[in-house]
Length: 135
Ligand SMILES: [Zn+2]
Image 1 (spheres, rainbow, N blue to C red):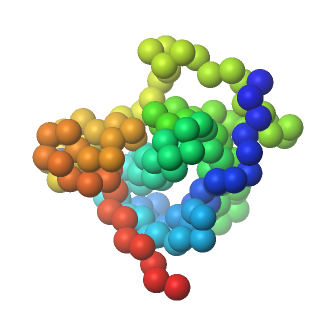
Image 2 (image 1 turned 135 degrees about the vertical axis):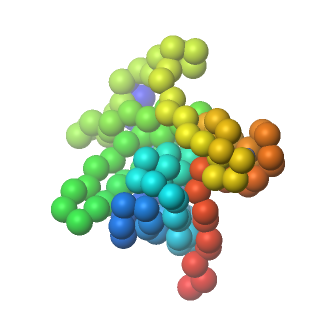
């Protein structure tokens, strides 16, 4: 049962079904997508990128109007619910994992949360539109 450290972590505050704000390491970024599903995938993709830099799963806190929950996001975008003791179950090996996939916002071909760039059209962050918010 690996435990998930509190740093680095990512927080997502949902504004509407298709946009919100992501904060990580003191940097706030607005994130927008065409659909709620695409937004969800984009938040996971953003967090997976932080996990790739950390070299392990990181904590993602999602807050909406009334709910708040925490998941661990692995470098490939695989997600697991974090338990009250801050641990997650042992993850399945990578080829047994179910990782959600979406469509590139530019060319509409398959894009995974583990992609920094679309492998077809080279669009950066293919699932969502990201814009850093200056302090
Ligand atoms: Zn593309």
